[in-house]
Length: 132
Image (cartoon, rainbow, N blue to C red; front, side, top):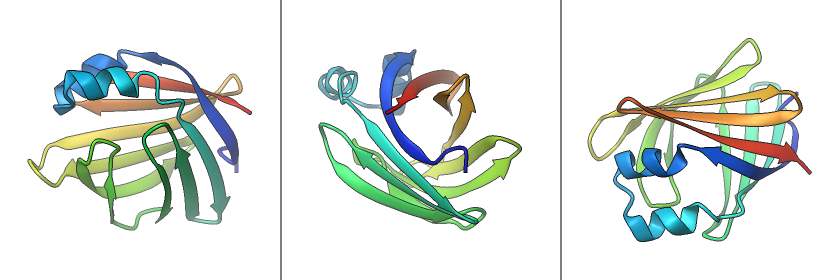
């Protein structure tokens, strides 16, 4: 339930390098750096609904902990995997559909902020969100 709420991206760390490693072209990376991403997260038991709203798209992502699902990133990259809860962290373990490489996503609340960490091919990035 700690994840519930409306979150707006405040700052990023190493996000451009992460997107570059993911194969996102320079134009899309520049736009993504200013996407004004907002997340609305609601949890009902093991079921989560995440409403993403940004300059690029609005999408609802519904998933259940431990249940495999497919998800497309804003650049069109398709992922397949699961989210699990480990203590106070939501951990997403995904594989890219196009090349089978692993992408790890971690969401945690720290100091009143939602920290979203991405790990891909040795590159780690963070996006930090403030509650609205």
